[in-house]
Length: 400
Image (cartoon, rainbow, N blue to C red; front, side, top):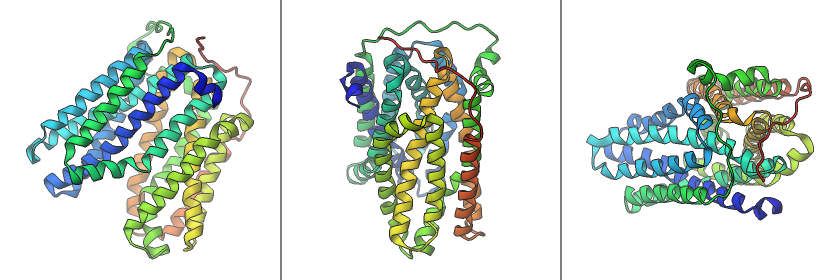
């Protein structure tokens, strides 16, 4: 970490991206609450998240854009455009403009996928290969650490003053990220020109995953795990009500403990990955998720809190290991599309499992669901480490 923060451009870039997560986390919950206030409808409030997710599903297109343009100016332009888009929310004055909130949140999802793909690719130019794990850990640490407080800050500002301060906060963090990214001194190579039909260009990311053993196994194991992992959107309510016999508001305590575990995971991820490797880190994290499911079964508060902390740590390790593996096993001209392809491939089973969990929780005991989640997640971990990779050198573009 000392080497990482001694790197001027790394300090600027990571600071900008960390600041941006503050505004992101404050806005998404506040917008759903705002729609609820304006309309009184739970369904219309829930459509805020659907609009955002719909934007994410365009990630194959945004990944191609990230590979066809220089990533630093693309990130600057995207952050500026996102700041302007967020400011459009100031035009909303009543239920008649709810459509504008949905439109902005759709654009927010598109911008987030574009930023994520370009960021993953730019880091390989910005940093030596042996610092990628540390950089990804810092980004996860910032995202999870700020998530402990910023959604509450956004909701609190909305209730106290109204939406304008939340909108201004998010726009300001996008502007800060744009300014800090513009200040980088890296010499970014020109993007590779298109060499084939647009359909082949669009699917180049998933094609690279299919022919790269480590990435293929990562994708398949991720899909297996996410077929049940979406149950976590509903199971904790049953854990709180039926297991701990507490009010639904106690979910805030569990989320805080999970966030604390995530912070610990961000601190430890790079060090563990240096000793185990990226794929082993993800497998360990999946096993940790399975163990966390089992710890949520007893109606003991200390055991449940330990499970939530382990869950937070494990999620961060999955993200750090997966992103670093992508960066080290993908040629620079394909990084945006590979990142986007994986994002799309895991979003679909996750959405399905969220819906399935919402149905099953009403007819199946939550403890049975937790056991099923543990079994499936262990299967995903075993598949990931089932056989060693063929010899495959890391592919990382490094400048300076």
